[in-house]
Every structure is written in C-alpha cells, then in structure tokens.
Length: 492
Image 1 (cartoon, rainbow, N blue to C red):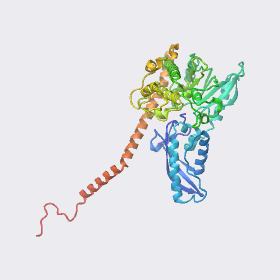
Image 2: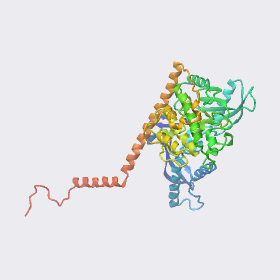
Image 3: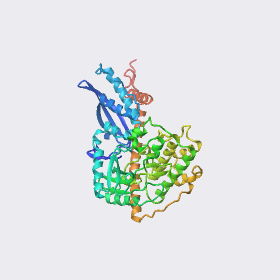
Image 4: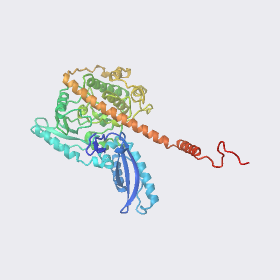
C-alpha cells in the first residue's frame, strides 16, 4: 500500500508517502467559479509535518459522485442536499462548506475505506493517476512468458483485496485439470523494501520451499525491479473474512463483499479456541524459525471447515515485498508495538475480536467489549488490546489456559533450517520495517503533541490568562500619569 508515485516535497527533496496512514482534511476556503462552488481542501497524512500537506479543489458534484459510489458499498454518509437555485448565496455557501467539512471528517475516520483507490484518487489525485490493473497485466504477462506460457489467464479479479496496487488474476495451468485454478498475485514494492530484487527473489524461493499444514504453499515466485508475483492455488471458499461475512471471493469487489450491509456471523467459543490456537501455531512456526510476517488479518487466513485444520496463513511474502500492513494506521499510534512479532500479536487480538463479533474492532485499543464476546475471550483481548502495558508473546498466548482447552493442541511443530545468509536477510527485513515504524511513531507523537499544545493555547481559559498577562504588562510599562512618581515634591 505504501507506494510513492508523485511524492510530497520537502525543501525540494521528494519524500515517499505511506498511503495506509490516516489523513486529515480541512476545507480552507470556498469560491464561485463559473457559477459553481469550488472548495479548497488541505489534506495531510497523520505523520507529516504541516509543510508536507497539499491542497485539492473539488466541486460539490465531485462530492456527490463519490458519495454515490460509497452508497453502492453500503455506506450512508450525510452529504449536504443539492440545491438548484440560490447556490451562489454566501450564507448557503457557508452552510454547505460546514456540511462538507463534517462529511470529510466522517470519511477520514473510516481508516480501511480510506485505503481504497476511490478515496485516494479523491483526496490525493496526483499520486494515484496510474492504471494499476493495466500495469499489473504487463508484469503478469512477462512472468507467463518466462514460464513458456504454462499459465493461461482466465480473468482478472478486480479489487479482490484491500490494496489498490495489488492485482489478482485467475489462471489455469498446462498439464493440470481445467477445474483447478491458480491465483496470480502481483504487488508493487513498498517502503520497507530491504534490498534488491535478486536477494528478494532468493528470499521468496525460500518461502516457496516451506511445507506446513497451516501455511498456504507458494507454487511460483517472480521478482523484478517494480514488484513481485506469487502463484498459489485458488481456494474458492475464500478467507476467514469471507466466512464471517457469508460471502465468497467470486462475489465481487472488496467493499461489495465486506461493506456495512454484508451479512455477519461470529464463531462459537470452541471455534474461537480452535481457530485461535491454529493461528498462533502458524505464527510460532514463522518466528521460531527466523522468518517474519507482520501481515496477519482475517483476509489473509484461508478458511475451509471441511479440512481437519481449517486455517492456513496467506501472503507470507508481504514482509519481503516491503508493503505496509492493513493495521498500520492503528499500529503507528501504539508505542508498545515495536517489532513485526508485536504487529502480529496485536493483529491476532483484532482477529479474535472479529471471530467473536463477526466485525472488525472499530478502535485501535479496546477495554470494553460487546456482549457477544465471551468473558474468557475478553480476558485474552485485554492482554492485547488494552492501551497500556506490554504485549504478550506468541508463546505466552499459546500457554494461556484459554488456548490449552482445545482439540488443536496436538499440531505437529516443524523446524526450518536457515543458512546464516538467509537468517541475516530476514533480520535485515525486520530491521528495515522496525526502523520505519519507529520513525512514523515518533512523527505522529510530535504531531499529536503540537496539536495538544495548539488546542491548549486556543482554549478560553488560556486566552483569558494571556489577555490578563498582556494587560498587566501594559500597566507596568505605562503607569497612570496622574500618579505622583516616587520622590516628587508637592507644590503645597
């Protein structure tokens, strides 16, 4: 998700941007242009200095077009009503600006929705003019030619996932039954890319060699100077998120499958224990063997209840590709998250919440849970989603009594032997990701500190205090001329 096309500029030097970080929007002014109201909106990323913000201009019609698209996804945001007459009246313009500001504020609170291309193109158009599908098709075609056309594309699956710059293609393979489908996934490199494509290809080859019952096997890998491609079998039943939303991958684009109007279901207590245990076992394998992940979420968990072990982790190559995680907007605000393992432990808490309720946790931290969350699950969630305190390790969660009471206890544990060079490569991937995370956390903390200071200085109490200080200082500098100065003699 973190891809810089036309990055913001600081002192003439272009800096990369992370599209997963939250945005703020303020309408600075409105004016009439050819009889239409035009609104100037200042947009900034959460970690950016104010000098890194940018301005976009929008007409009301563009707001209305965006809102109609969001309605198709199931979102019902309140947009000011249209008006055919009197649109140039100053009072009307001011009221509409106020309504549009409320609309934008509501919009940017939807962190995941803001990762969609429709929102990115609305608020940051200069950085998102690329035709991602067409570019992805070019790279996928190069990969297919490199395999002597073993794979044949059946169709592109637009907006299958939440990343707008990751593209998916359904394909068949020569020599295999046509009923067997393969998923070709093309993704641009992200800001955490740790080294060149040759070393990246070597790391991907290592992942391709992994055989584990709780991890989706990778059939083919491909890397060039722009991004990477992985091939795995297509699972028609989809992900854990598909199961919770009672949908399937073939049922349309991401927000049509998972939008506010989708049908939700949670899991029972035994399922939560069993599925949670399997997820933890998969994570333990990754980190105990010197690998990295950092991208756990329900959409990255393939799910099939007909299997003895329904859970399989997907997209284990994401850390190598260097892309930001789905929960970057939350993680960047939490000082207790410092490593990729911390990212996955935190994400595991969010998945547990989702298993219990059928929907994602709406906030970064949580200490009060819906009644649908069993008390025993709440005890685990408090260890992970509380705003303070250190996070438990994966092993500590596995040792928790909640996950001991499950039939998934006897999962065989596998060992993976990495060469010293491979170990160093994955350590470098981890260091690169952790370094940028620490930098983002520091920037966001500084922005929050400045915001608190500005709010304090603008408070009524503080302004009254400064006014009294100015008055006192003025009295000291300009005493009453009718008052006798010390030592002056009287005429009488």
